[in-house]
Amino acid sequence: MTRARRPAVLAGAAVVSVVLAGCSAPGSGSLPGVHVLVLQYRSDIAPHRVQLEVVNGSKQTIVVDEASLGGSGYSPALRWADSDPAEIGAGATVDLPAALTTAGCSTPEALSAHLRLSDGTTRTVRAVDSHGTLAVLHRQNCFAATAARTATVAFAGFSDHGRTAELDLSVRGGAHVDDGLTIEHVLPTTLLSPSDEATTWRLDRRFTADGTLTLTAAPTRCDLHAVAEDKVGAVLQVQVRLADGTSGTVNATAPAALKNRILAWIVRACGTG
Image (tube, rainbow, N blue to C red; front, side, top):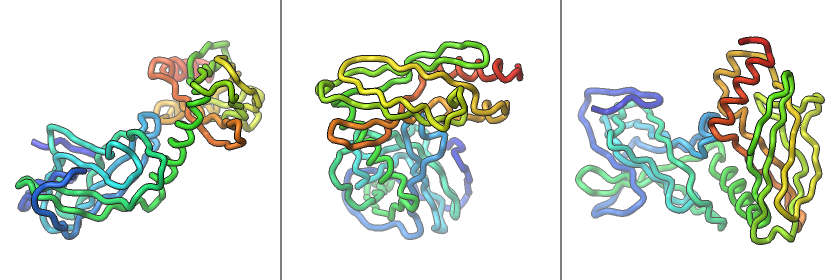
């Protein structure tokens, strides 16, 4: 029995068992009416993944056991698999989450999705990244990999001081830490903002060894519904500059336990619980 997924539409029409796979199999061709869209929702940012949205525009129900995407610039190929297949009725779509792997920092090839049917044949369908999601993610991930040779930045600590709190960032040197890395600023989030009401935490601190940074924060807004529904409020976007002058953003994501403490503090600080 297939599980419901987002969105889940099941149909009782004739079923074609389909596997989207990155490897080839005997026999290949197309599957008319079926294509794959690449999306990323806010809830996908912290877990570092995208959605492979399978769009079934054919007149048959298809069953997807495994999905992967070629030409994304990531290796191994972005892939979804589940022991419980996704059943997609005629005219329906289903989102299949695929974790981002390692970005290969050469020019990505053309996207493609390869569909292997239950009889072992492989079908190739169109893959579309209409919002440029993968291009942005690929560029960010390649910059982060380059920056990590000098240093990495982690969301390492949190302390509650009533209406304000301190957020600790840990900087850990890499193989080329002597080159130096400058943290220019950190952007506010949907949950956390500078306590002095500035638009960013302006820092301009250069590191040539391990170190720490402390940011003083206040709740961005006191909206209990927004707090409960938050997906990215504990992901700090850190703007860094490398020794060669290249600038970019790296994400410092709070671990789950730390995020829970932040959420509880916001509720207390706002007087809503």
